[in-house]
Amino acid sequence: MGSISVEPSNGPETGGAVLNITFEDLPVVTHTPITCTFPGQAPVLAEQMDSTLVRCVAPPLVPGADGVRNFVIYSQALVQMHLGERRLPSFIFTYSTQLRVSAIDPPNTVHPPTFEEDPDPAGVAVVVHGESFLPGHSAGLRCRLEVDATTFLEVVASSVSNSSITCSIPGSAL
Picture 1 (cartoon, rainbow, N blue to C red):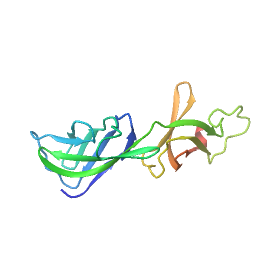
Picture 2: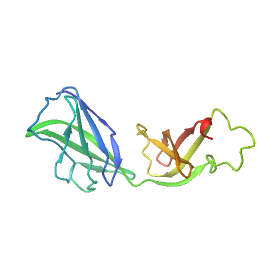
Picture 3: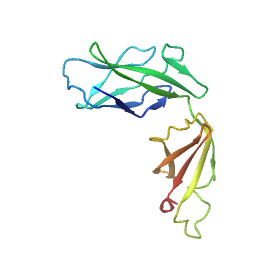
Picture 4: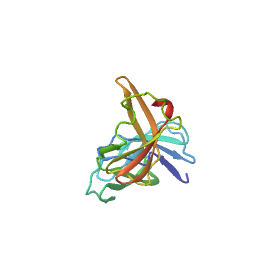
């Protein structure tokens, strides 16, 4: 069965992240359940998509459970996988504490006061300041910005530290 990869490898401590778990080779089964067991929780029934992909939903974090390592802004949980009674490879899932945004710099990036000049075609780098960002966990990280009352722009973000991320807003959006 070999190694596995998990995407996303992190999510909120409140649970709810849909995990795509990719195996090198997994027998397609119809009557044997595949489960993900997170520390302190009952096994979560996984959905087998094909011979390599399984999906399960992360339950809420149980902070003091066996198999959980707690840090200041995140916790790591050792997740066990099973095909019926057969043990599959395990993986580490990182739960992030509730992130908080305290400031955006520059503050009026999406809604500048006037458009007397054409906006910079290269775009603008925006820094989002706050708490509980996970440095080194940029995969899937995005900024969702309000352009107007009915339009939102989602752009790729980069993790800088546990207190800031950057987003590049394309010039065409300004």
